[in-house]
Length: 231
Image (cartoon, rainbow, N blue to C red):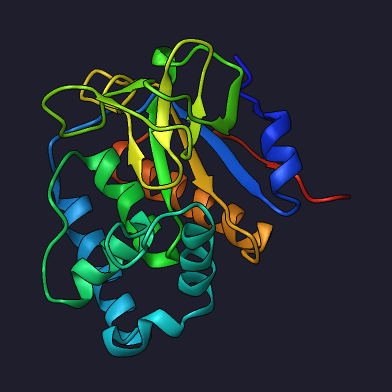
């Protein structure tokens, strides 16, 4: 099943330079943790601590691009941070990432390394095609870690399939479609923002897929960009 991403007419009208990158990996074996994951965490933690400084992180071009995008969406990025920046800040402040599973921890490591928001979905929980659109007033969404669904406002950007909201773009994923221990086929999606190069999105998704393969086995499939940018 090929997964594609469409853009609503409203998004096409309001944004002239926006992209997402999607890739898939099949036949994975998800564990709670393993030694490969622990070694990978140490490697990535050391790399980002050598590459980034918490004091001037806000001036990084990628961080700046997502922050500017958040302001345009009506969100304060100092209070609700893009997920890539939030994960990176956690590590730079000397904290560990929470251990969810080998596959989820793997794509979170790719997200913080590249400072790109990344979602991971159980492919069998999706009803494609996927679409990026504005949320609808009162639309229900239950994010990972939420006790109960919340009602969205019409000002949010969301990723949806034919049935449900999959993500509040680009910082919170749905509990319904998350990767679990039972997941065998996964879809990884990297969320772009204006002034974030497509090549960086591709690199982030490819890094996530490779990290998942290292920690959870599997066979990497295609990686594709869906963009509003003129070709």
